[in-house]
Amino acid sequence: MTLLKINMLIKKASTFALLSLMVGCNSWPGLRDRDTSRNAPSETPTAQQLVAYLNNNGQRVQAIQCNQVSIDAKQGNQTAPGLDGLLVCQKPRNFRLKAKVIGQPAVDIGSNNQEFWYWISKVEPVPYVFHCNYDELEKGNVRLPFPFHPDMIVSALGMGEYDPSKQYEVKVNQQNIELVEPVANYQGKQVRKSTVFLRKALSQGKYQVAGHILRDVQGKEICNATVYEVQQSKETGAILPQRIKIVWPEEKMEMVLRLNDMQVTTVTPERSERLFSRGDLSSLPGFDLARWAPDQGAPIQRTRGVAP
Image 1: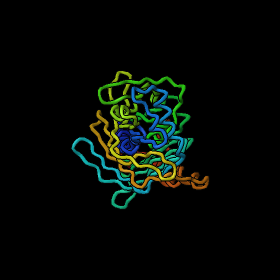
Image 2 (image 1 turned 90 degrees about the horizontal axis):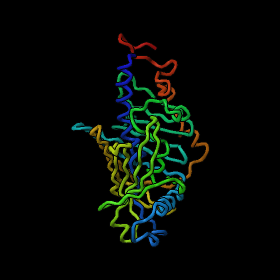
Image 3 (image 1 turned 90 degrees about the vertical axis):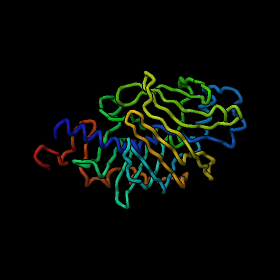
Image 4 (image 1 turned 120 degrees about the vertical axis):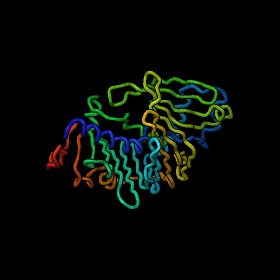
């Protein structure tokens, strides 16, 4: 396979994968905690107060499952077919999203403590299972076509817990208050992540997260999300996202993600080992992002046909 074809293939696959992964990159639930809202500040809160509030929500959830995930996406004037599927997430890095189009498998994105992967059925010329080991990823030498942070998924689902000793910044504008932290992504670059709170809600003594923004060090927006609806766990009182709109400005891409019937759950060790693994994809050709090459035995697209 020529380098140009590999780049085009990775880019196309990653564009679709990004649509699903953006839920980990760009969105937080709007939080209305029944136990802590009475302690919400009437003036501009400190970074410590905001972090404590987010941690209060995250500590209530160890694993979630959503059996009714729907995704609508478009890029420019083109609209992708609606996806329906299953999402399961377990701290610290276990994640699986399997989606179908008209009943046929279309997307499989997953992660465990060792690696992450994604597979898109319609990618041409070869629908590889793209995968990467986290140890290689953390070295900063892996070329990823999108900013991906393995811990953002759990944070986006309202499960994240934040280091209170970390250096945060609080920015205030007319409508919102942003909790800003520097985050190193895995392309060897620095980005800044902002959690956006509604200023009006804070002035009324309530916390409400309106969205999340990822910017580069120059302040250019990489991606953003708006949380339209949330749902509250009956078991723990945790606030979980329900409907989110994600926008990726540079690619003129947007997505609406609906997470219906989200439940706080427990994942047994046996199910965890089975679910958070790409073992059920072993019959498909693989592509190692760290080596930037197909796995041994995977088909390689050549200029004159496909060789095993």
